[in-house]
Amino acid sequence: MSTPEINILAPGEATPTTDVEMTSGDAPTEATATAPAVAADPASTTENTQETLPTEGNDTVSGEKEETSTAPPARVTFLDYLKSPIVELSVGQGDALASLTAHEALLKQSPYFLEACAKSDEDEKSPRRIDLPDEDLDAVGCFLEYIYTGEYFPRKVGDTKRRLEEDTSAPDFDEDGSQMLKHARVLTLAEKLGMPQLKRLAHSKIHYVQSTARGEIAYARYIYANTAREDAAVRTPVAKFWATRSHILRHEAESEFRNMCLEYPQFAYDVLELVLEAKEHSTTAAPGPATRGAASTSGLAEGRERRDSSAIGPGSARKRARHQG
Image 1 (cartoon, one colour):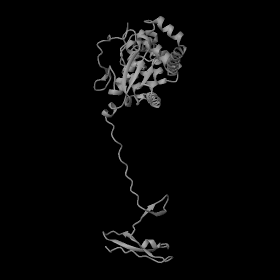
Image 2 (cartoon, rainbow, N blue to C red):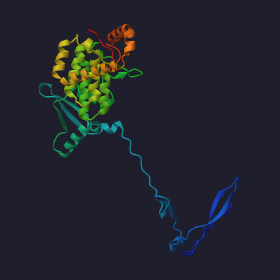
Image 3 (tube, rainbow, N blue to C red):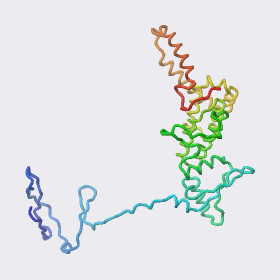
Image 4 (cartoon, rainbow, N blue to C red):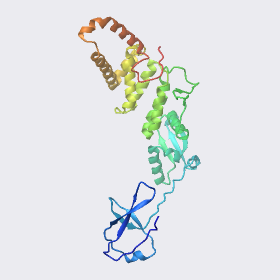
């Protein structure tokens, strides 16, 4: 291979350039072409090396070679969190007032506490204390357990995480809704604190609590009293559950169901809307006049079977088992 040569020309002088073309063999061949004239800079005769930098399009500019190196961010360890200042959380009021503490760096995972800690930093004389007079103590405790460990009791266990670890202090069936309300309060607290992952975790745990009709009514009442109307991810499963089971479960808690509908008309409307949509869908899929008579007997039998099995079957937004009576 020939040795490359560097020629310095006078301004305006054209120079032949050499393009390398590959042939069928291994050795390259040379083809000569004429390049446009380029004015030579006297400074180009010095030993300073410059590099041709690409610009937008096919143009090039000459500039000094710049090397940029970005240092990786320092890893934040758990010990770093524990070195942060301690913040006091005053939860509840009156006789139920309780004082909890947590590390500031962990609390700041929540936008709510991030803002609260910033206000405390502005006033150096004020103590590092945040008041939560209207919050549930157990829900705040679950939040603190979550920011320190990534979970809260009872945790989701098993290979598929589709069941909760045993809580020996709770009955097998949630008769009054207290077990579901535990997670519901964590859910609404997570919404207030801007913790969407914790909200999703709490909502998923509700699906694995075995409850009764009265327990379900207590949970539905809390959800419709403490969530926004636009929060379809939380409200729709509640309405869908009662739309597919109300004809059975309402007899177990008829007065509670009636009071719920009167107290929260939006709940009654959401349930009725889903029932009518299901009815409309089934009517649309009904057989035509020519086949309706022949299919009537089997259709009624199948319909009764579907209604009887709907207590634990299709259309449910929940995956947990139900306790009848």
